Every structure is written in C-alpha cells, then in structure tokens.
Image (tube, rainbow, N blue to C red; front, side, top):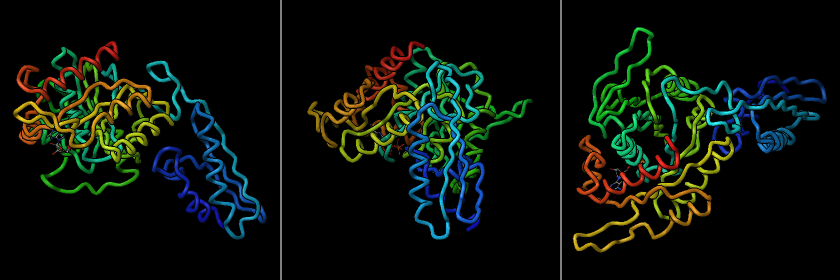
Length: 350
Ligand code: ADP
C-alpha cells in the first residue's frame, strides 16, 4: 500500500454538498502507510461540524474496504473559518476575501441548465442599474459563456497599469466573461486547477470599480467553480433561479443545499418561465403553476419575482439588448424584472 494509492482512492470522497473531491481541493495534507496502519491527515476550514463528520465517514467508507490497508486512521484538523464581510460565519473558506471596489457580491445559481439563469442574471443586472445602483456582471460559466451575446459585446478587454483586466462596459454595467478572451467559437479546454485560476482571476484581477453589486452568473449545478467561488470571495448571498417544473425544483433544492453547506445565505428565489400570456391575455402555465412559491416557502426565503416566458425576451437576449432595458410599461417581462430588482434591493438594503 502506498500514499499515492490512498490519495487516488480519496478522490472518491467529495466535499459535502459539492461535486469536487477533497484531494483536488487540497484538503489532504499527509498520508503515511506503515505495516498495519494507514494514517490520513486532513485539514478543513469550516464552522460547520457536520462537514468534518461527513468527510470522516466518507473517508472510512472508501478506505476501510481496501485490501492490505490495515487500520485506517483519519485525522481531521478543523480550523475555524473567518467571518464574512456581512458578519455571518462561513462554512468553508480558504483565503476568502472581499473584492476591492465591490460592496455586495451576489451569486445567481441554478441546479439545472436551461432554466434561464443567464437571462435572469443579465436582466437583473440591467434592472438594478435602472434603480440607480452601480452593477457589474461576471460570467463565471467558462464552458458556456453567454454574457457577451446578451450584451452584444465582442471587444477584447485591456489591462491597466496594475496588470488588472479592465472590464468591458455595456448599458452602464461592468462586464467580464471568458468569451471576451476567446476567439469566436473556440471551445474552452480548461479543467480543474486551470479553471479555478481563471475564476480567481475574474474575481481578483479585474478592475471592478465602485460597484454596489457584483452579480456572479454561475454555471449550472454544484461543481468545482461554485466551490472555488464561495471559497475565494465572501459571497453575500445566492439567488436561485428555477422554473416551476418539479425536475427543475429538485435541482434547485440541491443548489440551495450546496450553499447551505458553505453558509452562503440564500437571499431568495426567482421563478423563470412562470407562464406564457397570449394576446388575449390568457395565461398558460407551461411548466406548472406555483412551484416557485412553494419552494421559496419550503426554503424559508422570499420569492423575488416570477418572470413570464415570452418571445421578445428571447429575441432581445439574442440580439444583445436584454428586455429589461425597456421600461416596465413597455413589456410584461421587463416589468417583472424591474419589480424583481426592487424586491432584491429592499432585501439587501444597499
Ligand atoms: P441558463 O443560463 O439557465 O442555461 P439561458 O438564460 O441561457 O439559461 O436561457 C436558455 C434559453 O431560454 C435562452 O434561449 C433564453 O433566451 C431563453 N429564455 C430564458 N428565459 C426566458 C423567458 N423568460 N422568456 C423567453 N425565453 C427565455
């Protein structure tokens, strides 16, 4: 039995609530293999005792059945996480800081892809700007960035004298996306540690300037990027986007649980594609009725808004001028986004 073999085996142990494993996340500090005894030293920074308990149990589940391992001893050193910028404890933070020039960091998340998370993030950013707030939008989806398309921006960002990337600006919003760094349709072949580095750079080496809100458009699901973000910066809270459909709600619950594990508060839910209203004014609940209301109540968080599905919203997104640029009086989806932004602002008191 060798430490390398044990290390590989421990790649099956995930950080509770996330898809990332404890080895790739650097929590395994030491492994020693002596005849009849294998010792694994783990260090985790968390204020949630359940995190360490779960890792301990999962390590034993993986290690105990291995042949020739002898007795498996898992030693976990738990270090308290520092308090976040908003004063709350954090479940798991390694070198976590605030971002210079940013008052509030809000993550927009969804359990599932295709529920309209990016559409909501872009329109919410615009609607928040319309309330007088200064807003930045960071597209953290390295593999399917969509902010460039939705804001009609194709330029390459420049660097300032401090070697920071100067965010692009459209409709008064500071923007950063992987798409700004890529040539046309080239795929992003970055994985694991490299993806982590890009994200950390987006957060710390972009010259975000004087922002009330930095909106992070997360990739769907509960993977590496999400974990990296919550452990790199003090996220003030997350907003979960879901459709009213049960399959989307199931995944929305998983996303909420993930944030719970790392003590990032869920600020609220936004239900997208809530209904379609025909020209005669009749509403069709294409993806079911009331799912967002029920889920928000179950999570004990506000439902910030219900966004109808409509053709103009898709067209405006595709053509680089999100629907929320219109006044509330012009379109019912624009109105829903303006209401949602107002609800969020009063909840955030910034
Ligand atoms: P996600 O970020 O969750 O993958 P997107 O924001 O990319 O989802 O949206 C998926 C598709 O649905 C896009 O084509 C988008 O234009 C469309 N879409 C999202 N929300 C709405 C809406 N309320 N009405 C009409 N189309 C929408």
